[in-house]
Every structure is written in structure tokens, then in C-alpha cells.
Image (cartoon, rainbow, N blue to C red; front, side):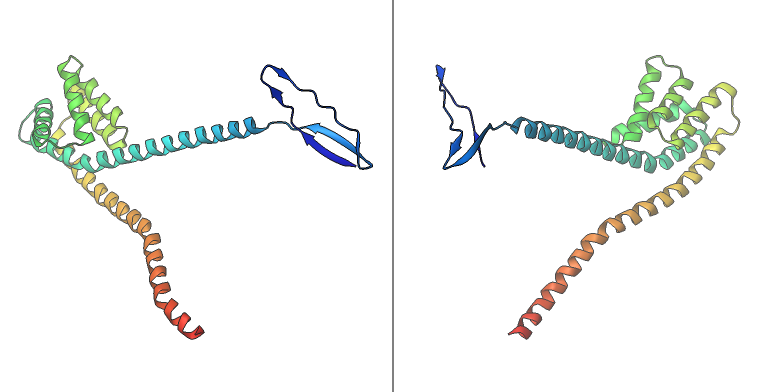
Length: 219
């Protein structure tokens, strides 16, 4: 039994009818039309491309979030230390905040932590209550240390916390210890990332050294 496939063909302005034989060279013939499944492949490729784009976007957002958190965490000890020093010198919290923001603006640097401080200062100048502004500052930073700082400053306004300067100095010492541990962790992560390239370089060097010796033995 012979099996053949045939594609239907249409000419412009009409169609052509083809008579197909039932047998050929004494063998019965079965005819069938070919189905076009290319649309399914195109659909699958489209879905795969969309999934890849979504995954890539999420990965990029995750990297940006991790980078922002790293900057905030490294800047936290300096912020708390400067606030404690200004408070110890008898300067009010709001004036201390303004001085830190002004110093940051004059430096021309770019830092997410100080940018959040500048946003908070603008909120207070636009009429937002000082205590609420501190709490919103901590919420925007989304780190436990900043949430703690925002709550501490807000409670100081509401309840009149005593020795706020001492509390900030103690928080500063703890923050510097945490930054040392965090810097050590970042160093270990960098070492682990460099391990694979170093192994590849070592393998390349070994191949370059051993290949001439192997070739000389074979010859």
C-alpha cells in the first residue's frame, strides 16, 4: 500500500481540481492533505519569548533592589552618627536633618539613603507632620534599621524620649558593628564569585603547559 501527501493549491482567480488515482503500479494508494502546524511553533516561540522577557525583568528589578538595600545599609551608620553628634551639640532634630541634607546636596554625590532624607525634608516643608514624616521615611527605606530609626524619632516627638543623643550614639555603635559584619559578608560573596573564573584560568594554564608535552610524546 502506498501513502502520499498532497497540498491543495489554489490559483489566483479560481481553483484547480486534480483527479487522484486509487492505485499505482498495482499498489493501492492512500492520499491525505498536509496540515500546516507552523502557527503552533510560532505561538510556542512567542510564549517562550514573553516568559524570558518577564523573567529577565524580574531579575533586573531584583538586582536593583539588592543594590539599593546595600547602599542604604552602608550609609545608615554615618547618618545615625551625624544625627547623634548634632543632637549632642544641642541642635534640634529637624535642624540636624536639614544640615545633613544640605551637606549632601553640596557634595553633588548620589546616594539613595540621603535622597530619602531629602524627600522627607521636602514633605515636612510641604506641611507633613514631623513625626509622620519620620515614620514614612523608615517605611520607604524598608530596612529594619531605618524603621527603628523612624520609630525612635517619632516617639521622641510624641513622648519626649530622654537622652535621645545617647540613644543615637548607641545605635551608631551598633550600626558600625553591623556594617563591619555586612562588609565581611560582601567580601565572602565576591570571593565565591571569583572562584569559578580563577578555576577556569588555572585549567587554561594547565592545558597550555601540558598540551606541548603530550604532543611531543605522541610524535
